[in-house]
Image 1: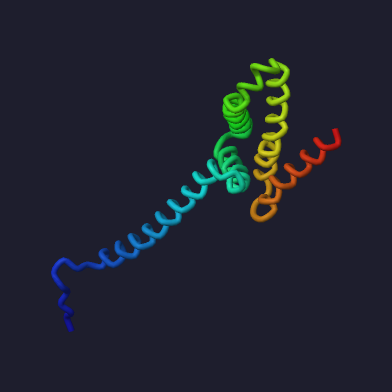
Image 2: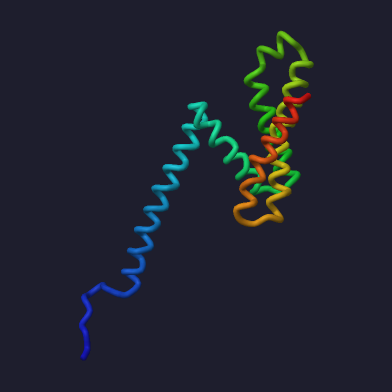
Length: 142
């Protein structure tokens, strides 16, 4: 028995429709995540959560040393804009301490990048908080 198909209908059409619906869902999720990260730049409590995620993603997309240096330079440049008035009052010593604090703050991302190359899965997600807490506790003891 021969089944007559409608004009313009083919099997690829149904597959394309399914892909289009899933692409629309992924697009919605991508827009939502982008909005959350952009809101994190303005709303500090959300930024405290999204900042390390964005930093870990950024350093994970680069070669280990290049990603660390780029993250360090980006943080230094953005911090110098924020502390410009304090630099005018206190001089280069203030900038030196700020750069040291930024170095200590970005070091967990470097250690995270080195450790996660060898640890797949769930263990890799624990490296960034572990190094962050270890360096924070070490800094409090100094």
